[in-house]
Length: 497
Image (cartoon, rainbow, N blue to C red; front, side, top):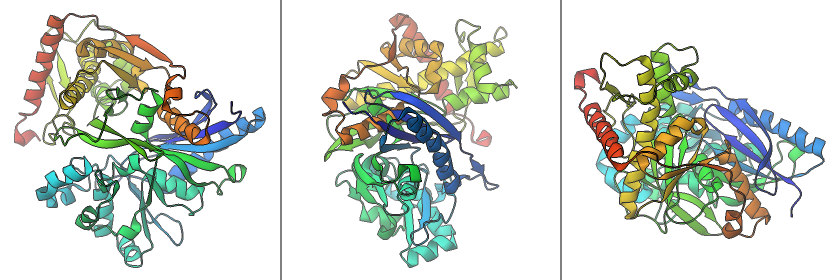
């Protein structure tokens, strides 16, 4: 059995987590460093790439110190990262040439409108809806609007990358410009059929091929660290998108395994036996790639779940909006017929209605702020269920249960209601850093700590189980009310949009 640690870095939207993971596949030390978002006057959402890197350096330093004090070597580095955030830098200097365009930023809407006639072909090739979310539109916007980016493109000095690409570039002091297939599949530039950058899509977004990174499997050698003295020579052996990493971290790898990550928004992913058939309501993606084998998946993204609870707390002027809303929701047995649809930025999967707007329905004189709070918590479960059932339909088979991870899963009321509305068992991971753990386990495979997925499935599972507690009639009544609320949300008059 290996005796060292894997340093797992999970670079997220609001913080960077760093963990030391041992040969049991579990964390023995963890630390977090905050990272800021920049909201510009134009309504853009950005991040400073150097601040992202600095947060990694700070968090890593504490892990290195802990490993040193324990007398244990760090054998590898693994990265999981926020997806779709688009970074650009100068190949000759290694310095960023613009702020990273956040996955949350909608500045590419005009480019998507221009390419709308190609939307079906885009989805066929990439598995993604043509939407401002994808990295391609963000890079395309930089090329159209930033003179420095344009000049570097002409000189073939421009480099585009995901957050993982940027971190590997920094760790290796520019020696590696790489992206794994899971991250690449979220850019809107990877052809799922060929698993290469699509020349037609690069041309459509006016992105030079010379700016793009080398494609790699999710586990393998990405480069060796030279930028941090205490980690000199330590190999980067895994890089993977955070949602994919969480899927891997659950430790079940069979077709039909489905998980939901509960955060600001939510992401559901279901493993498939092969590349799924095209579907207009779900994304198709690379879950991960190992030793030349590619695991495909269906995915559905929901823009507002935890942030919907946050919004209600702010609306109610609560001191700690998200936490206080959850506590307020606990004071009532149920939402008593109130439904809240948090479509403030439109509806994601499976509706994909950008024009929908948030609604509260079913209010009566007897309702209180606690019922609205409970409706906000319930809305998370309803939205997840919508995607879950869409996945069942697309796969043509019944999904047995749901694996759950993310901060909001600490809410037992939410987990129980999720099981109730699905009519399936929900298995909640007790590991709050499942993305980092998943990345670390991929690196462990590359190190030879485990022989393959079969052995990894035998690793201990830290889970809590929630079983349905309502009957089919109650479930159907609740579901009809939610569907009616969705219908009303999509009928909001144009004047109010």
